[in-house]
Image 1 (cartoon, rainbow, N blue to C red):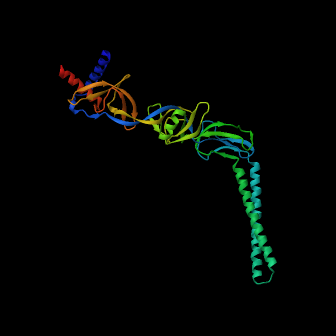
Image 2: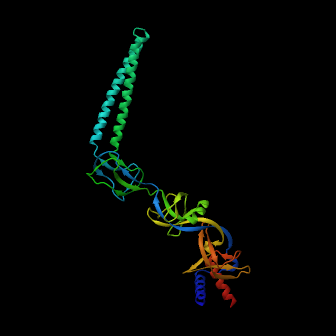
Length: 348
């Protein structure tokens, strides 16, 4: 206790040497008050990408070019690799030729229909002739629509030889090499997006009901910051081996320092409790110790050791022990240290 007191005294002296004298009545103070805060259960979680997929081949062909590789960043729609497209291109040319023929047949049938219709209106031909012209026109129209559909299918098959990124992200795995022949359904490349992330945690059975009711969670980062989860998704069944429920916490976009695969801490709210809080600037830390300058009603100043808890989002810190509700603490520890030194010198 003697060494600890000397340490705090030396700290006050050093603070007093930094600036000029301060009077106790000039100190800005705040009152320690009781505040209702959420009680949380901290569990382990793992970061994963919301968008992660493996692109597979949709047509047969030989790989002729691989444009991106593992760890490369791609934009949505970027060409990842190309397959040999000789067969698909030939089918497209055949489909386009068939479409031109069907279009010409349709124009011929329509012209014949117009001619027959004019003669029929003058009652120079029978109804049977008019019906045959109508049927020929409808048949030509159907062949034209079929040719257009065949061309669209051929274009789609040709596009299948150009494998593109479904969204912006990072290539995580390449499953094929140049020269390899692939078939429909064969994996080509895997990737994930870093724009939208989530954290997956296993919540024990004894906490799941409280977690569901409060539906609040924070992601605790290594630098001391916390990020509020945007939404929680609860799996409706438990793991029979561990009796835990899988819960997903959606993160806001653009959180720095988080990457898929990292392990983090997730604080789930399970109840509410009352605790004593003071403004965070009032807390003084020296090595492993923490203290505040308490100012009484007569202007007396005391440096009192406290046991702090977690930081609250509104700029306050929880005090677990060492302080009572209603006591005033100095918001400027440097000025309070100077005022305390002056009081000690005046008392001598």
